[in-house]
Length: 497
Image (cartoon, rainbow, N blue to C red; front, side, top):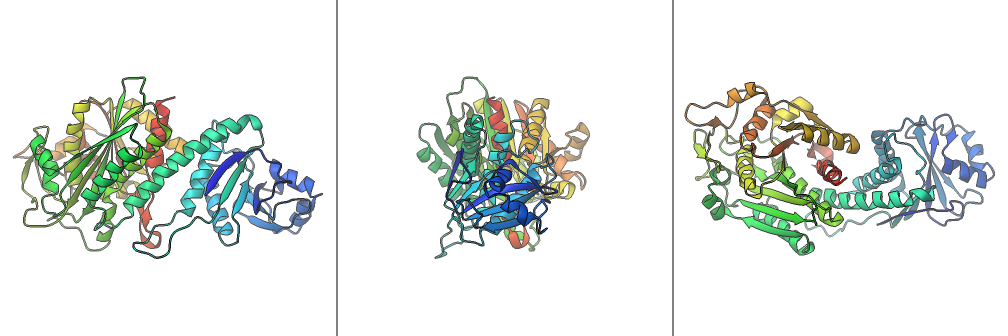
């Protein structure tokens, strides 16, 4: 599917369908009014029938509109003028895609550039948001060994830009959107794979492919089990000790002609399957624990966006691949592990394994002297209890990072909520035989998990995203959401402005 931005003469262009908007109480958008005038009021005459009034989500498909070359015109209700939000725009395009997929439409012109979604740099966010929404609602999970190949419903979508002075901004928005979507789609694809295919070794292969795909900007180093042991990463290696699939940590180094000395590291929890270990999870929905690598998938996708846009930054992306299984060699409740930092951890629950993998990874990153480190993890069910499946938990030891992520969250509508790291919570991690235990008491589980990680992130500015509730959906429409790839991408884009 090809997407373009152009300045079109709507009545003269030959296409399968033109999409235009109608505001509440029969108020035309500029594009709709133009088509109505060209057709000598034909659209007005149809509106008098009362089938559509312009309320949010209403649609009417018109065929053979007089003096219009397009085969169809899709009139879409936009609700009250100047009250449209990104959330309502997303719902509108969900319905548009659903409608157009049912008919034989291949080439489309979307003429929405005059619409205000209450954003600074409106045309940029309008084009970028619509592009990402379209790809989101066209995405399909590829079935394993299926003889049916997924194919895009549409061949060409053109965004009509009424003001020629906005064409350059619209082109930039489209370029950014396509790169971000490439990252989101890649994250979804790898995350949706079954765990017998996507294990830690497979994850490392995917990382290596990035160095072949982007040889000028990306190099990859894979740290295997023996190398981890030599580094003293005994917390990380303990988690994988019960599995025949050994752990691999993939270090993706991106260099993009950085003019500053700032280094940013992104760390993704990559538990390609998490049984819970000896503290085994309930059988119900355990199959969804293939999504415990969603953090690594998000970092993988974000690195693709970075390389596609050749951002002038220095970024280190780490996919902390591991598998937590039961076995004769599995680590146990009661074990005491020595981390790479030299600090010791008493294991009280083997299902609190992500923080053990991440704590050694956070220490490993010190060798790169990063200014900013962000870890992304499906870390705790407690975060799902606290925030549900729409909002990710956010923790940081730095106010600048909160401000920057809060800004990126509002820009992308990928919602986060800051939770505290108060000293009181650290007390619940006390152990009589080690520096820390790997869980706190039964309260504030998301916070105590973040507090545990904070003990290994004192040499740089650090943020932690708990995406346990937002990384995938369950039920009939089960699958990876691709979050928080766009949030991470926007955070990085904002670092270069």
